[in-house]
Length: 259
Image (cartoon, rainbow, N blue to C red):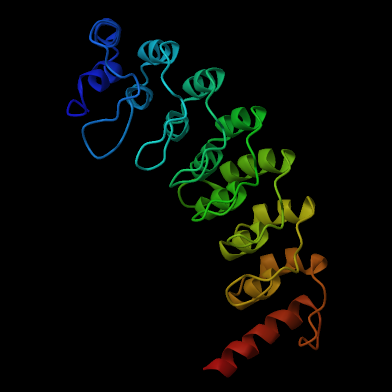
C-alpha cells in the first residue's frame, strides 16, 4: 500500500500524527483516491489493515464512509469481507450505508458469500435488505447457497440462511434460481429440509432445463433428496407411477432415451 500515497500509507499503518499533519497542516483531501488503479480511499486502507485509531480520525474529519472504489467497494464491504465485526459496527455508527451495490453485491451479499453469520446479524439489525438482487450473485440467500460445501460448510450456510429468513428473505426468488433449486443442485439435504420446513415452493423449475427440484434430484441419482422433496411436490403428469420409485425410474428411462 506504500505506493498509494502518503495519506493512504499513514492510514493503513496507524500513524495518527502523520494523518493529522497531512490533513490539518498540508490540506490533503481526506477522500483522495490512491495513486494506483484501485481507487481506494485512506479510510478503506485503514479498514483493510484494521487500524481503528486512524479510521476514527478520518471519519471524524469527514471521510466519506460510502465512497466507492473501482470495484464499487465501500469501506463497509472491506470490513465485512475481512470478517471484522468491530469495524463493521464502527462504520455503521458513522453513517455507512448497508445496501450499496458493488462488484460483489451489497455488504450483505459479501457476508453471505463468506459465511459471516455474525456480520449478517449486525447488517440486518441495521435494516440491510435481504432481497436485494446482485446481477452476478442474485439474492444474499442465493449467494450463501452457491458457496455452501465449498468455501463454507453446510452448517455455516444454514446459520446464515436462518438469519436471512427471519429478516424476510424471499424463499422463492428465482434470480438466478430459487434457493431450493440451488440447494438441490448442490446436494445440500439439510438446507433443502430447512427451506421446505419454512415454506419454500418445491414446484418452481430451474431457469435452465426447466426441471423442478425433485426431477433434478432423481436425475442425479440422489434418492435421499427425492424422498425429502416428494411430500412437497405436486404430481407430474408424465410420471405414471407417482412415487419415489416411480420418479427415479422415470428419470432413468428419460436419460436412457437420450443416449
